[in-house]
Length: 235
Image 1 (spheres, rainbow, N blue to C red):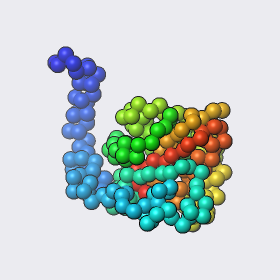
Image 2 (cartoon, rainbow, N blue to C red):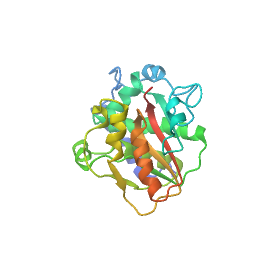
Image 3 (cartoon, helix red, strand yellow):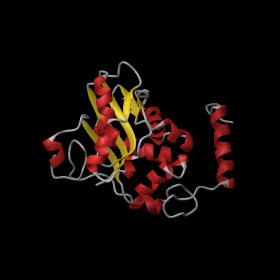
Image 4 (cartoon, rainbow, N blue to C red):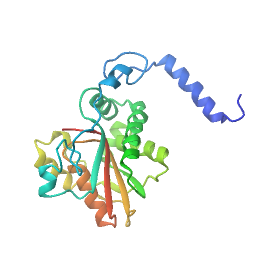
């Protein structure tokens, strides 16, 4: 055994190897055996690059019309990929199919986007989910991503927000205005004081209503700068 290799790391590697033999990973998009996202599907994923709104990261030549008319409560948001194809399959695998093993893959891409962004934050806050939904699912996917990002960056993970009610899912809302109304009354602060600069983490961003609602809660307890980071952004 290499003297520099921690015993728990070696045991973990052995256990992971056993699991891969008994339950080999399968691409969440094309179902090919060998990895949770195969090389071909990874190449198909579209990075959320190019001309985008500097606030909400919606494809736009400059600031989008919505942000020009009334900017959200958060300073700005960024996403690693467009919410389509294999990137969407990754989000759905984590969020609906219980494939928690894809969280480190997604968080790695988000950490790369964060490094390129070069913002200064004091703490990371995961967008919460209702307790009933989390118990059914077994985990909060946003918290899993936030925890991985915290480990990679050494930025502390802060329990800043709770979801006060289950309510209706954002996915079930008929349009943008309905999403904003639904999100606005769903969250409350978990602590009396927030870090001054916060990174809000979620799996995907559609209209920005969820990030905005969480940002309003954090702003009310002292946060001065709030940024959003998601794995995928719906155009």
